[in-house]
Image 1: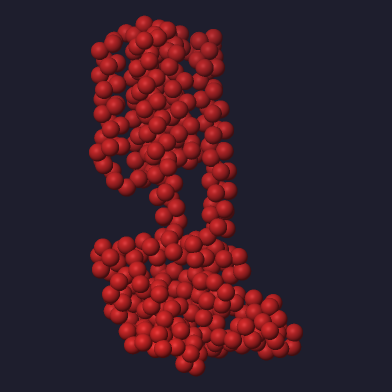
Image 2 (image 1 turned 90 degrees about the horizontal axis):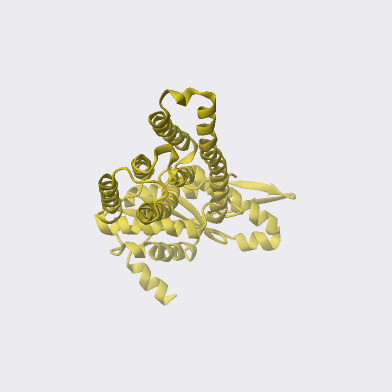
Length: 362
């Protein structure tokens, strides 16, 4: 069973990743500004237009503050990062224009953009931005050397200066791609249950917290199903733990076949599973629960000559139908599951307040 992280969880991871990229991008932007300011005090080549350079610094600093501190774009996206890298290219090109163009000692500032782009935006965008930088570079070379730019000696000299940019873009893109691939595999491994390939509770809780926040903010309904395999301990004791593990995998597979793409299925631990059903009414949740119960009731397999079969007990709780607090739904579903287990098993129980009295007495 191949583990697959749901889109909502992947989206959560990407949001956190983009926030980290955004912080790093901000540091690079301020570094560019600081290095450009320092050039006023240690100019190795004359500044052709000091006023224009100061205006460029002020405008770019204002742009950075607009993006970073005035909530120009509250949600981080790769397009926002791309726009920021384009602004960095424009800023660096303008600075080079006033400090020697292709002969400017600040030419290597382009490397910061290339590295940032390779790490955050991928190979294709990196190639496009390197092409844009190359166009700016060759145009400035033409302004410095005029038609002599096509002369073998001049062109070779210019390409020798530019070749490190191509090398850095290639190497950084490859490393970023390998790191992203490895991180994706590690993420899947850390968020999935080894035995079943389903989400583990760490991943499930991440999604549940977002659902609870959405429910509290917009009063949207959601339902939780708690599912427990009946008689797993007896199967482990009489047939063996390998049979119990196989039963858990079969139940997990049956559950996957019964849930919708929008539902979130996870292994709660041991012989228990949990399903989060967003935007689901009480009626639809009960229908889904009965379908799950019936599907597993008809499932069995042979293990060393022994016929192994089991059933499941299910507890359901919904917000806001019967649970007034969005964060309490999981606990209330567990109370309903307790009722199913102690009322004969192989049944579905929907939570209501009378179950709390029963649980307290028991």
